[in-house]
Amino acid sequence: MPLPLTRFLTGLTLLLGALSLGSCRDSGGIDPEPTGPTPYTLKVPAGFPTPVIPADNPLTNEGVALGRMLFYEKQLSSTGTMSCGSCHQQDKAFTDGLAKAVGVDGVANPRGTMSLANVLWSNTLTWDGAFSTLESQALKPLENPIELHQPLTVSVSKLQNTTTYPPLFLAAFGTRTITNDLVLKALTQFERTMISGNSRFDKYLANGRQGFTADERAGLVLYTTHISPGSVRGAECFHCHTQPLMSSNYEGKFFNNGLDLTFSDPGRGSITKLAVDNGKFIAPTLRNITLTAPYMHDGRFKTLEEVLDHYSDHVQMASPGLDNMLLTGINSLPFGTHMDLTATEKRQVIAFLKTLTDSTFVTDRRFSNPL
Amino acid sequence: MKIRFSTLGLLLLPLALFSGCKKDSDSLEPTGSVNFTVRNVAGSQDLVLNNTVATTATGETFTTETFEYYLSNIKLIKSDGSTYAAPDTYFLVDQAKPSSLSFTVPGVPAGDYTGVSFIVGVDAQKTGLTDPATFTGDLNQANNMYWTWNSGHIFLKLQGTITSTTPNKPLTCHIGGYTDPNNAIVTATPSFSGAKLTVQANHTPQLHLVANVTKVFDGPKPVALSTFTGAHMPSAQSVQLAQNYAAGMFSVEKITTE
Image 1 (cartoon, each protein chain N blue to C red):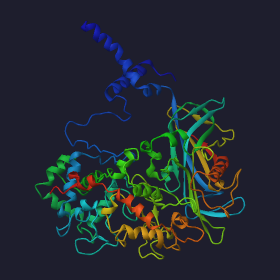
Image 2: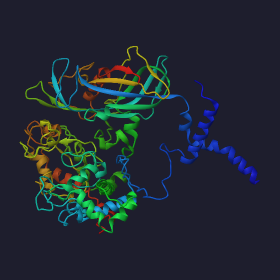
Image 3: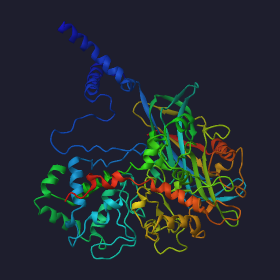
Image 4: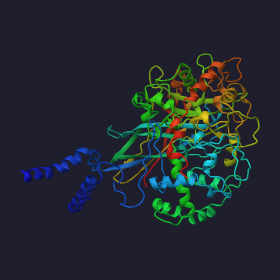
C-alpha cells in the first residue's frame, strides 16, 4: 500500500526534528528533567566489557553519594557496631583480612568476604552464585543473622527517623519516604562505581607492553599459557581468572580447583542441587590479590606462595569434578602427576600477580568513609 | 548580506543533517529482521550439559560440560545468488546461557531468501587485527573465548569427559587460529532444502538452526576419541575438527514467520 503523501511528509518532519534534536545517537536523546538527580558518569577502563546498569536503577551523583553514606552506616546493623564497610575495607580492596567473615554477634560465616572491585561486571555474585543482581545480593548481608543481623525494614525506620537521610533520599530518588527498595538501590549504585583498572598490569598493556620486569613478564606468560606437555610450560590461570577482570564473574562459571576430595561446603552445588556442581566456586578476581589474603572461599591459604604450591603440587587429582584444565595441566609428562611448577616459575607468577594491585583504587577518596 | 546568509543556512541544514546521519536515511528502505535460534543436540537428543551421553559415528561416547561457539559474518542468500551480508554480526552461543541461543539480525532488506552462510568463529580481520581492548559485546575477552597471545578468539569450545575409554578421559577442544597453516576459520552453509525465508518490513521471521555436537568429531576428517589428546591452540588437529563442524554440525530445522 503506498504511503499517503501527508503521512510521509509528517514522518519526514518528525525525522528531521528528531535528527536535529538528538543528533545521531541510537537511543532517544531527550534531555533529563531540569530538576532531580544528575547522571553519574562511569569511567570504564580500556578493554573492559560495556557495563550493564539496570534500567530501573540508573547511576546518579546523588544516588551514589547516598549509597556511600549507607555503605558506612552502622545503623544498618542490629548492634549499631558494623556497616558494610566493616568487612569490606577499602585498604584491603574491600575485604577484611579474615579467613571467614565475622558478623555483629561474633559468629563466623562459612566463607570469606569477597572483594567488591569491579563488582559492576559480576553476573553471578558471591562464592556460589546465589544471586544474579547486586540489588538482590545486597539484602543478604544486611539481614543475615551472622552478618549485620537487622531486618531491612528496621534499618529503614531508623534512617527515616534521622534528620540526615530523608533529604538525601529526596535528592537521589525524589522522595523523603525511605523504602527497602531505595536503600538497596542506593547501596548498589555506590558499589557499581568501585572500578579497579589502574594497576601496573593495566599500565603495561596501555603502554604497548612496556614496564614489566623480566620476572613479571615471565609470570604473565605462565598465567596466560595452556600447557603442552614437553613443549610449552604454563600455569593455566587464565582459563578461570579471565582477563580483563581476572575472574569468572562475568562469564558466570564455577570450578572445582582440587582443594578437597570430599566437600564440606558444596559451593555451587548448594544452589543448583546438582551433584556435578559440588565443590565448585566462582573464580574470584585476582585484581588487588596482594591485599585480599587469606585465599580461597574458606581462607585456608595465608600467602600467595601457599596458593601457588596448591596449584603446582597439591591439587587433589581424584577430586570428583576437578576442572579439566587442572586434570590435564601437567607440565612434566610422562612422569608428572601435577602441574609441577618450578620454584622460579612460582616466583614469576607471584611477581605478575603483584602487578594487579591498584593503589589508586584503595586510596580513592570517592570510596572512603564519608561519615 | 544577513538575509542571504540565513537563506543559505536554511537550504544547507537538511543536507548537513543527512550527511552526518547516513544510517537514518538508509533505514527508509524496507527492511525486516531475522531471528536465529539454535538448538544444540547430541545426535537425536537435546544436549543437556553434564548429562547427555553423545555417541559418535564409531560408537565412542562423551559427555559435555561446556559448549560454546561464535557465529559471525552472517549472509543471507537470494535465489538469484545475490547476498545480503549483515554488518558487524558476532554472536556467542553458549549452551549454559539460554538467552544466547536466540539472536536477531536487524536491517535485512525485504525479499525472499533461499540460503544462509556464516563463519563458525570470527573473521581474521576482526580477531587478528583489532586491538583486544576494543572488543565489545560478545567479543570481549571477559567472555573467556579469547587467547591473549596474538592467537585471536577461541572459535569453539567443547569441554567434557570421554566416557568410552577406561578410565574416562577429560575432553578439551578449544578451537581457534586465523593464520595459515593452522587457519581454523570455517564457513557453514546449512541448506534451506528448498524452503524460503521471506523478509518483510517490520516482520521478524525465525530461522531455527540445530547444532549437533557429535559432528565436531564425525565428518570429512573423523577423529577417534580413544586417541584424542585434546586441542587447545592453533594446530593441524584444530583445523581438522573445524572442517568437521563446518561440514555437518549445523542444519536448518524449520523456518517460521510470526
